[in-house]
Length: 85
Image 1 (cartoon, rainbow, N blue to C red):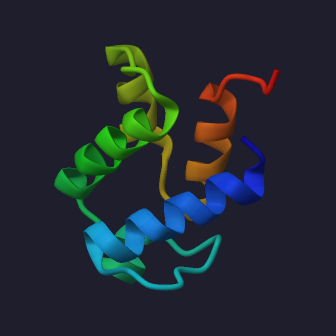
Image 2: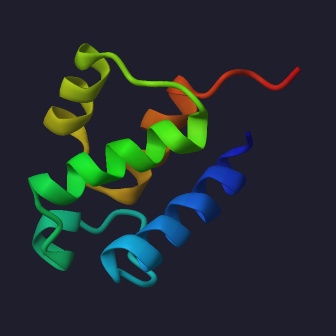
Image 3: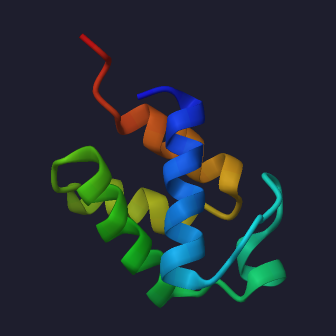
């Protein structure tokens, strides 16, 4: 999955699940859009569905501790996504 494909899927998730349309790549999602820890948990479930596997507790903790912007989410997912065959 390319970074552009990941971005498109994440933006769709944000629009459909959180009613956040067109967030800036470097917006602090918590401050700019009211994205809270419950939203983050739901986003992690959506990421698992997107990737087709369950994240470990350590992967989830790292996400919860470090992700604040859309760019950080994209980097996180790109680091987890399997390489294309």
